[in-house]
Every structure is written in C-alpha cells, then in structure tokens.
Amino acid sequence: MLLYSEPAVCASRMRETDAEGTVLVAAIVGTDGLPTGTDVLIPYMRSFDLAAIRATNQLRFKPATFNGIAVPVRIFVEFTFLNDRGTALPVIMQRGNPMVPPVAINTIWVAYPKKARKNRQRGTVVISLVVTQEGLPAEVKLIRSVGKELDESAMRAVKRMRFKPASMNNKPVPAHVTIDVSFLLYY
Image (cartoon, rainbow, N blue to C red; front, side, top):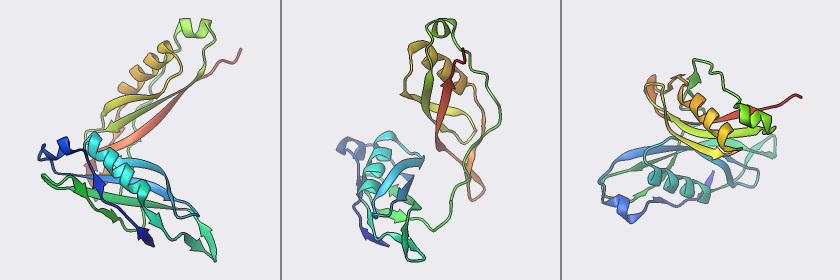
C-alpha cells in the first residue's frame, strides 16, 4: 500500500521543450517499505528519466507481507509528462510484469586486446544501453570502466549486438538494458 508520493519534477528548461512522453520505472520495495534498485524500463528523455527515478525513490509503502512476514516486492511506476507541465504523478502499475524484456538474438565474440592481456588486466566492464523498437542498441554508455583497451573492446562488441525488442501489449517498445562484459585470465 502506497503511503507517500511526490510528483516527478524535471528541470525548468525541459518544460520549454513542449515534449510529451511516458517513463516506466521498476524498483524493489524492501521489507522496510523503501524502494531500492530503481531502474528505467522504458526511457523517454534523460532529464525526464532522472526525474522519474528521483520521484520513485521518494515513494513510501507499507511493506508487503506473506504469511505475516514482510517480503520485498517488485513494483512498476509510470510517469506521463504532458506538454509544458514539468511534473508527472506516479501511477503504480498492476501486479505482474507489464513488459516482456528484450532478448539478445546474436552472440558477439569480444576481443581480449593483446596489450591488456600482456598487462594482465582483467575485470568486468558494465555497459548501459537502450534497445530500440527495432532491436538495435542506442544510447550506449560506459557505467563501469576496467581500462581503456578493455572498455573499447566491450563497447564495440555491444554496439554489434542485435535484440528481439521488448514488447508491451504485443507492441515493440524501447527498453533499458545493462550488460556485463567480463574479461578473465586463467594463467
């Protein structure tokens, strides 16, 4: 049960864009009633996405229970921004997953650069991207760096990936994805 909410408020300069769109956010409501792990499932524009994340993190809930014990639950929150209004009220979506996530349809070989292997560099590069309605990677961003050579190799590989796009109500929709690319040495 929702106890407290605030509207998503974007920067004043974004109100002048006369843009309309919806952001869908997912989060886990913990046993304390506080959202964690907030992530954008369907992005709109970066500033609107950030406003939706901030507003979701301000939500307060009565914790869910199962057999009298508090349990974490996943929630989906939708924010619809209309024209020149820089605010959007949160709408908690019905239980269940309203979106079928994207699925990679090809496997990409990631090159382990010679220089990085020679220097025994290893680790996991984390990359964030939006899978478009056509199943192509867009807005590819480096989230966690390991080293220049490994980062570049991982980014090249992710940009070559193709996906079956996410869908909602049997219609393709853009979706946010985070990919971990691990570089390991066994000698």
